[in-house]
Length: 395
Image 1 (cartoon, helix red, strand yellow):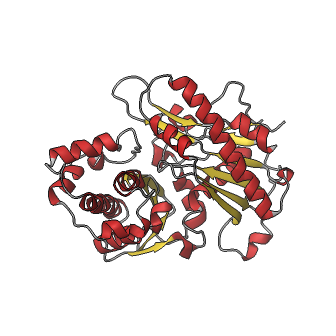
Image 2: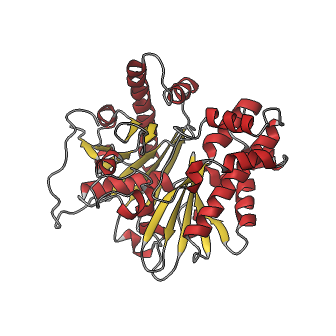
Image 3: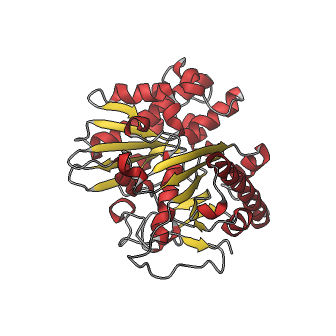
């Protein structure tokens, strides 16, 4: 959080909540920023199946130089502070462009938006460090974003949960309960971003969630390295390969998969170095690149299926969202490993799969403005509910 970040006065229950919020999300996959403009309007929502309405959706990819720098900043390097400051400036510019595109699409002025919920770009996530204090670091420049957009910005959502002893992640399960929860019905929601995370919505209203393991973070990186494409469209490249049993077994030996929830992870664990160590351990360094991609798909499907079996045995369906939801082959493998479960996109429940995470941060910004908690202690392990975020006023 930047010095001087202001926080709101205590919430008054009679304060009217304006209806428009923007959510911005740039995930571990580093493919760019997704933005949504969301309406929370009781009158308009009376005929809508969800407690919100996405008015506009925009995606802007990162400039190659910015994507490369954000990836490099995930690992120790020279002159990090200066480079991070410059990258944060560029990130704010990209975020502001997404905001402007949303306003243009919705034909709204900045004054019509109560606040922007900006997640920032996670550079480090160390919820259980071997030494020192736990921390999470999202690169962001909310002051500059507020200046560029003339809209209040709520940012730094994760650190308050960590200060209360939580993992700081995942934060989306509370949102999943709000938009996908059905009284008396069990459901599971799987977000396939850079990291896969599962939310379990029990029929009695209880909600749990945790990170399952890697998804696009390794799939996209391996695809870029060996095909030059940013991702494996629909999983077609992987679908033409074969599983390498020894390599899959080496992947599955990772201790993270056996750890019980609450748990969270990121590039700090699942990165190219981890993949290379597994390839060496399995004697698979010379396997065909396409077969390695196929085995990475199987790893993601296996980790998610195991998580559902262990934590959501009563759920009859699995709603899938995130960029990985567009990987048709990965969804086929998820369905094959869980034949008794209906696997379908979150679109079927009223919210398109590529809008869910960004909408979650619009929702979290609204929770902050209302002085309502945004975390679920049962998910993150925090000592209690906490109001998440800090406010950067436009003026």
